[in-house]
Image (tube, rainbow, N blue to C red):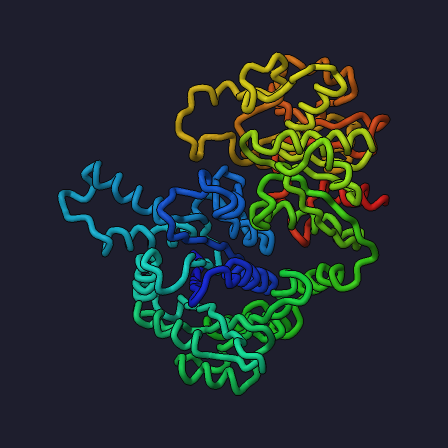
Length: 545
């Protein structure tokens, strides 16, 4: 079995420093050097997963191929690397305690007192080791410890990784600490005290960081690195800047590489010579990242996309969606500008004005009736004015409802999610969902196959007859109305293999240049180096290409 190394990333002083993007960028650099990696997120909240948490509080729920509802950071991990992540890559305090308590109830601890140490910490360590056991050819397991050092919720995880180093040896484990080095005076003087105190807090937990990533406004000079090195007991060659970015998060792998971060990690693990000397100097894969960043620096055109949703106050609520739209512009060197519209504030008096600058309109997924009528107005505007439209999950369902009301003449057509007694329930609850009581993890989740109709617009985009896409929903197109929609020009161009579920719809191209709705979430599979074909075509059509 190949020897697996482990890298743990912690954060100090404040949240939202960018641990997720940083660890994803490190993973990208290691992959570019020829190593196989996976990344795991350990979240300190007691929820089993974020599936029942508000997007306003936690951001989007990211769905993996195997149907796990996870933290949005797993989206960064998959976008920056080729790692195929699943439910084992997302761990919460709730999962750990649920497992340990279930074992205790079954009598598996043979009457012993169950405690945080060793039972909780052992289970955390087991979750880390499981990834290498499942994929024996892994070179690196990267683990992000959520929360902030000093928070009581993070203590069991910090204790577990402290023990993990004792178990695996210092030569096989690395601790990276991400901490701010702010400039808080008018003169721009940089202060290192927050980092010093953060490292001391980590040392109280028995962990000495091996490498420091310093969040700053600009690159740290050698004198500041030497000062941080002296007071934090970290070699100055292992003190790195993580400066604010100029254009896009996709610059970060290049920024880290320019500071020799990846080379220093390899030296720490005595892996400098693996993969060839050229890997320490010139990295061919980074040329692809450079081409992505170049789109942001020098775009050839700009396109304005209206996103009409109900969670617009928090950018992270639709994080994967915004990223996928941005990726969609890369092949045509198009910069995507977002017009964020709160669907609750859209009404019959203002929708034309709100959408007047939109070259394309997208309605994303969501739950609950709030803001639905505003989405229907936006969809009708796109359909009537032949503005490229892309509906995802609820956005597809709303397109079906709007078409039923406006074109088919089905007055008061609706989804039974919002109007159980609708005379025209064009969207209805999946049969297997009718008896479910628990909310968490009980929807149609994860990747499912979908057959595409030959000659359809969506089949042209994918250039293959069968696709696999990720789902997160309970309601479906009501098969009772299939023929009515087909006859009126809304074609059901994506079906489940047994043809019982409608997965995608589109308007006849004689009626509209691009009007597509998908029950699944294609945004979860888009990457900067491999933009999703539906988003690419949507951006091209919106830009008039």
